[in-house]
Image (cartoon, rainbow, N blue to C red; front, top):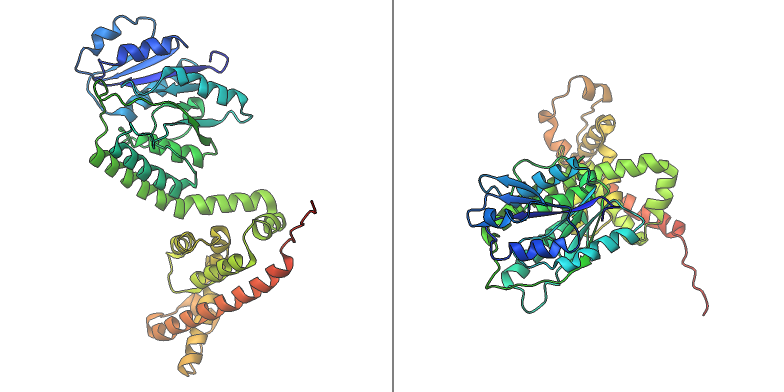
Length: 390
């Protein structure tokens, strides 16, 4: 742990029944401990007087676990630590599992990682409300990040605190929702996030939990809704542009478009969806709608997003012109609109009927045509699978 510059950060609030046992257990493995007393009103201060060898932070008034972790991490980084293992002081975690995190970090080539203890929530002695809360949290974390975690709420973790120090976290995530926030933002910052197996003990005679099922889950849900919006409007487009810039158009087309594992049919449907949304009269909402539908229909988000950009600002006058001319054709009208009129001075309301009908007709027709052409082309270009004879 000293070679890795790793300490243990322990937030505590009114856990006087179990705190001494936890501290003694951790001291068997390391003396590099930062304890954050989050405004305890029991005899926690009396217990901590017997541990002058550990670093202590005392908060006058309870503000929440998230706030305590943030303070502990900042303090630990100031002491020169790169990593911090956290565990709860309510006795549910076994300090003997500390080596599990260290061994996983040591054997990994990637040292930029966040490790979360997997408590095996299907065990019989785990409370039903804890299992339910973890399932809800884990489901939405996957929706935001794509991470296939088994346990997203465990407080027994190894944090890359030096790397996290560069990430900006919300000021008001002061309670349990911070543990969800750090997973999402770490993943978005290219920090590897994974579970490691740990043991768990739910002793109701000693354990004091401060998790409030309704309020804390509600705070997590609000945070997740915000993250979903950020993902739709920023993360997916950002990642798409990053891959495109890094690989170049040709390599991106070959690797991400042709060889990404999706069938020609799925890719063609993704093209059709992107073209349909891109040409539809949904200005200002193309990105969120196309990504939402791609997720809902389980299509290729990258391809759908790429083809929805058919209506990028430089192409808007041409899309408007085609929509109007198509609408006039369908309505049997002879109204002609020049491209110069669209740019200079154009009254859309006076041509609204023709535009809407033309836009819908154009988007449906173009989607069908591009989908069919895409399927035929991709079927030809799709790399053939090589079947080796036993």
